[in-house]
Image (cartoon, rainbow, N blue to C red; front, side, top):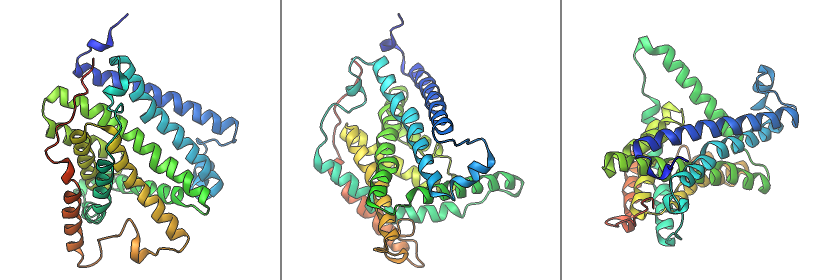
Length: 310
């Protein structure tokens, strides 16, 4: 029997990609079959696809499919991979120790404090344009971005407290756990072993984290978030800390949109997508960046505990 524990890091990444592709396909087929035979929804029919975003009933089924896809792409593969290459999979993924509450809180506050700066970067990113000869590519990118935005807005709609908790599960909790398992728990750790350079590995992982979302006109802000999450994970040596910070980022948006749906907040005072990007508010973005760095103070100079495979 092949001993995966001795597999070099440069080959581990290929093994992990194979597991991700196989698991994603398996879960996608399973989710699609459930929609087809249980909910009678055929995603390959244009009429059904076009109606998904307009009909709240369809949106609920689409949330189900997204949950299945996320489990198959982000949750199952890292766990299977860690089981194959390490006799202590939770140790390899840095999930075996309880996180320090102060680190979870300060990392979460840092991410939330950074929101105006992130929105300012998104504003700059959205104004970028490709050369004229690449206009078809740019049009496709903008259409993809708009489609993703429409999907997100439909998913974020929550009329009851039950809807809110469902959204927190599907949009905040599961993605926070899954994406941190994949990008920080596996990819960043393998990148560090391959390159031997911490900063380079954090940047590479953040780049992949942003690029694989396939939302090109919000690439820059997501890239910066990826760098912070990567640093928080490396400095703490505990994946639960970056999971908490990731959840804070996603959960803040979910709760804010719910409160706006209930008219408890307005677009003007706390829209997560527009904080800090009003006319002449560049100073708000600058202050938020400084505040985010301040909240990261407990991480400075920390030496993470080793999680080397045994």
